[in-house]
Structures are given as C-alpha cells and as structure tokens.
Length: 224
Image (cartoon, rainbow, N blue to C red; front, side, top):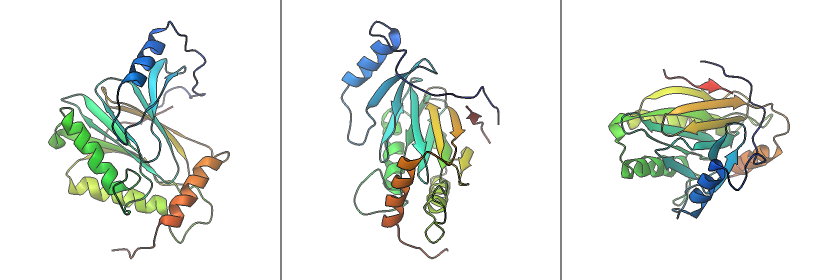
C-alpha cells in the first residue's frame, strides 16, 4: 500500500466561472441523470479535478477520471473497474438487505452498479473490486454490528459473482473518505479521526435501527 502526501481538504473556492474545471462541472450538471445516480457535482480544489459526491443509496459510473467521492461509517462503498474497457463505478449502501428496490440495500446497490457498467460497455467477467467502509463508528454497539454485516455481505456477494477483490480497507473503528477514478481504476482512502463525525454516527444509528439480528451461518489503494 503506497502513501501519498497527507490530504488536507476539499472545496470549491478555487473554481472560477472561466476555468476548464468549472466548465466541466457545468456540463456534468446539465446532463440528465437516472434514478439513484449521483448528481452532486463540484470542483475539487485539492485534486484540481471535477468531482461528484456519492450519497447513501447512490451510485456513479463513468469512463473518464472524474473524482468520485464518498464518506463512510458502517456503510460500504464498492468500486468496480473493467481495466479493458476502462470503465469504473462506485456505490454506497447502508444495509445488506431490505424491503423494496433501493440503493441503500447491498443486494440492489450491487446489481444496479454492475448492470450500469455493463450498459456502458464493461463485462462482468473482467470486473475487479475494491471495497471500503464497514467501520464500527458507534461506541458500544455490539449487538448489531452493521459494519461487519455489510462487509461480510459484499465479500460474499462478490465471491458469488466471481468478481475478484483486489484490495480493501474495511471494518475497524474508523470512518473513511474514499476517492475513485473510474477511467484509471485508482482508489484512494483516508481514515478519519473518530471524532467530529456526528452526521455519520446519526446515519449509522438510523441504519442500526432498521437492522435485525441474524444467525451466523491484491491491487493497491493509496492513502491520502
């Protein structure tokens, strides 16, 4: 695992109306989007790149190196990539299973991501995965470990679909910020301090309330 210089933050302050980055963001915002597809586009001043933020239940697929970003607590983000077609995508799900067709649930989120990549020209037989998240970010929540359940789900799902996991950064106690570049397949992860994560904790508590107890039955990632 290689380590790049410490990441200090993102923002839109460096975006000017006549910059190429601003023009690309405006172009992305103007394009029609499907249900569940991420649509929060901005210019990332740190990476000097157009970016899109994935919210819980959303996904994004592209063949360009737009910066696809999300922040995770117990949730999981799966980054899939077809190195031949140079198409990649990311999702963000909160629970392994649930009622209804929603990207907040792992089985539907994975199917949605795989199908959208195949529509764009990727082949499932060539896909490889990088997985992130599943952190136990709520102290003392041992009865229903949502992060562990999410992690076990995505590992089992990818094994069943014969999509190899080439790298992962999962479980432990840390929230994470993840960045993914769909064209090159490069993923970057930053482990966040367990403090000042109120929004993630609230999100994870909501997921835990919906969860029900169940009976137990290679690649590189850069730190930034």
